[in-house]
Image (tube, one colour):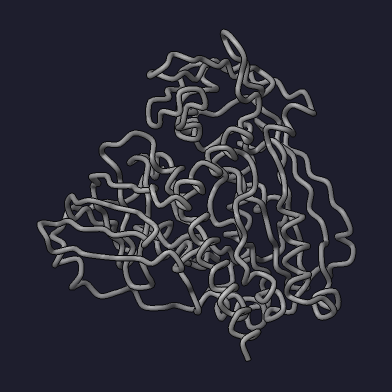
Length: 433
């Protein structure tokens, strides 16, 4: 899928009118039916099946909040099929509206900016649930998983459930990640896909539980490991391109510790610096071609990379400094390519400069618990997005190797460190009274 892009001067983009807020629309039955029909071909190819758990507790016309894990683009097709004919609005990224605003609104989409504080979103969800009598589908992870395990959930999610006060339904998919992992450049594998749809929480459950307890329930529901699932269920992926671009995730060699020199091609990932090679087997394991492996499980390798980033942050040595192509979004008419610049990321946060000295944007570590980053974003390239409620900056590194995953890890770990320090200061302040 591609996106509408125009080249424009930075000043001209800044002078544009920011898109005005519009209330959600209740999707009509024709659009709901159309979504289901358009989804049927892909689901048929994957021999899709669905299991219902406790769904008899939900009234036929009762609006609910539907939470779904986010693995690939097939997620929406699954939801459109198993929820039909129930009307539902979809919380989705604002750049999905670019060039097709009317259509996205007609099918019930509610725009939001990923990992940017959005006070209007909860109000729009309430409007859909209470006024439109429509359910709301939300992917609380906000971004696709890089390594096949869950991405962080916002601490505000439990509070959101309290505000909405409607039943919560959970959709879990199986095989969607294995069929189309984000790193693999949109190359589809022959994998069967299934889903569970479960009545998770009643309004009474939500009222009785604290925000912390609700967050714990949700964290437990969003704990998974797609590679482990593949291994335990003996799911065979025979495609010879299964390790293509795996270096996007496994960017650091655990043997020589070099970053940005890993290459994933065919069924192997190898380090161009020390020559160490691994085979990604048909059942999702890593096997060293020669010698002993450091890791046999991709999420373990990725977890080690996270720990390495944390150590760099604690030691004060972490730094991203790369040249980037800069695109901007201020409304849904187009994404605007405004020039080139430089993106840095340190313990002080992000700093983006460019457009012949006209652009200078900074973002603190406390701004977000994670980072909107993507591989092969709308077929443009690997991307890091920062910004605020008025403007988003999409940065495409042109040098420096595979930096997207590390930058997301650093953003998440830095947020934890800042949050932890604030909590310590708060406790110390209370104890001093």
